[in-house]
Amino acid sequence: MAEFIMPALGADMEAGTLIAWLKKPGDMVKRGEIIAEIDTDKGIIEVECFTSGTIEKLLIEPGDKVPVGTAMAIIREAGEKTPEAPGTSEQSPPTRPQRIKISPLARKMAEDLNVDITTITGTGPGGRITSDDIEHLARSIEKTPEQSRADKSSRMRQAIAAAMERSKREIPHYYLSTTIDMTRAINWLAQENLKRSIEDRLLYGVLLIKAVALALRQFPEFNGYWKDGRSVRAESIHIGTAISLRGGGLIAPALQDADKLSLTDLMSRFRDLVERTRSGSLRSSELTDPTITITSLGDQGVETVFGIIYPPQVAIIGFGKVVERPWVVEGRPGVCKVMTATLSADHRVSDGHRGALYLAAVDALLQAPETL
Amino acid sequence: MNRDEIKTSVLNRLARIAPEIDPSQIDPDADLRRQIDLDSMDYLNLMIALSKQFKIDIPETDYPKLATLNGCVDYLSSIIL
Image 1 (tube, rainbow over the protein chains, first blue to last red):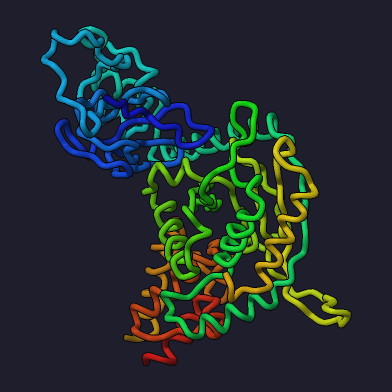
Image 2: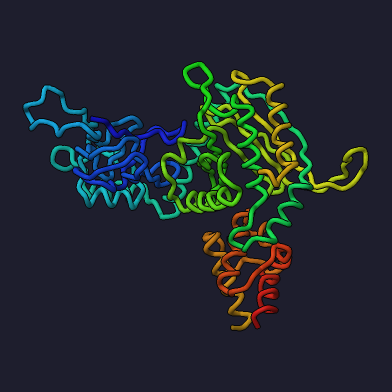
C-alpha cells in the first residue's frame, strides 16, 4: 500500500485544504493523473498522483485543512492483493489526522467567508462547529468579499515572505550581470513571426527561456537543489517562470523539459501556463518541479533585475528590458538592441567563474536564435 | 457595427484579461500596456482575441497602431467599416 500525502507545493507551504476528490475508493489511478484539488496560498492546485494503483481509502474529507506530509488516501499499488477483512490484519491502520467536527452547512459558510475553522471552538454536541458558531465569528470579524480577497492576497504575501526570508537567511548569494546584444535575436524573431499565424507567433521571452535551458546542459550545477547540506543536480531541466498575478503576488511554475521543446511548443506551453497560473488551475508537479527560475521585468521597463533564489533551488536568472544603446560590434560603433542578463547563484554550489561562463553560454546561444 | 460597438468589444476583451479594471477610467489616448499593466503575453492575447473576433489578420508590425484604446478602434474601423 502507498500513502498519498499532502504534498509540499513549494518551500513555503505548511498546509493545504482539500477542496475535492476527483477519484473515489475502487477507482484506478495512474501516476501523474490528477486525483484531488487542494486550496493553497498559491490558489487551487490540481494535485497529481505519484503512484499507479487503485484507491483503497480516502482519509480526508473536502474542507479538511491538513499539514504537509499528512496521509490523505491509501492506494493499493499494481500487483498488491486486496487487503484482508477488517480485524484480521496485523497491520495497524494508517493514522488518521485529527478531524475537525463541523456541520456541512457550517463548513460551506466558513469557506464562503474565508474563515479558518481550525481557530474555532465548536459549541455543538461533542465540540462540533455549527453554523451559529460561524455566524457569530463572521459578525465579530465582519468580513466583506473585498476583505476575504485581501486575506487571500495577504496569505500569499506571507508565503512569499517566508520563502524569501529563508532564502536570504540560508543561501549565500552571489550576483553577476552581463549585457547581451539582442539585435540578431530580435531581428530573427521579427522575420520568423512574419511566417507565422498570429496564434503561433513567438515572444522574445521564449528565446530567453530556451537559451537558459540549453545552456544548463553545459553547466548542470545551476540546475538543481541544495538539500541536506549538499548539492543535488536535477536530471531534467524544468524552468520556473515567475508570473505575476493581477491581484498582486507571483507564482513561478515550471515549464517542464524546456530544453527539449521546440520554440513553437515552448510558446504554446508558456501561454497555457500563464493563463492557468492567473486563473488558478495549476497542477502540483508544475509547482514542485522547477529546477531553476527565470524572472523578467522588461515589460515593466526595468533594465536590470537581480532575483532572490527560491529555495531549495540554487540559481535564478534575471532579464531586463531590451533597449537601444550605442554599441561597438567588431570595432564599429552603432546602435544595438541590448538587454541586461543577471545570475543570482548559491555560492555553496558554484563559483562566480562558472557563473560567468554560464551567462556567456546564454549570450552565445542568443546570438544564433535560429538554432534554438 | 459602428465605432462605439468596436470600442465596446475592445473593452470587453480587455476586461477578460484584466478583470479588475474600470472601463470608464481608461484614458483612450494613453498607452494600454502601461495604463492597465499588460505584459507581453496579455498584449499578444488581446491581439489574438481581436483578430479572431473581427476575423482579420493583425501583422506584428501593426501592433504599435493598437497601443491605445482609440488606436485599436481606429485600426479596426479602418479595416472592417
